[in-house]
Length: 86
Image 1: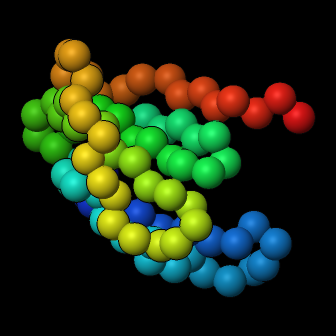
Image 2 (image 1 turned 90 degrees about the horizontal axis):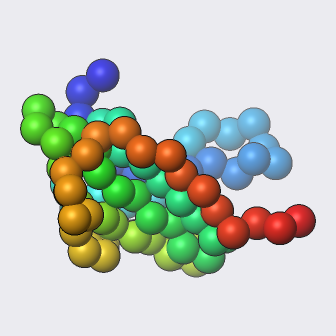
């Protein structure tokens, strides 16, 4: 798989194809993600070298990701969790 900065989305209740949401700040693969239902966060990954970038998006409106900060250690693959209790 090649590194990419593309963020796609699709409506689960339809059979439509994915649509473009925006772009990550850094192209990467094998990044980890978490969500609280309002925001999505993408961290780490690799694009030939490990990436320490953390990006976030708001699910309200499709747009490019914003830089949230950096991991304290570069790493490609991590686990993701969310705050759902339902």
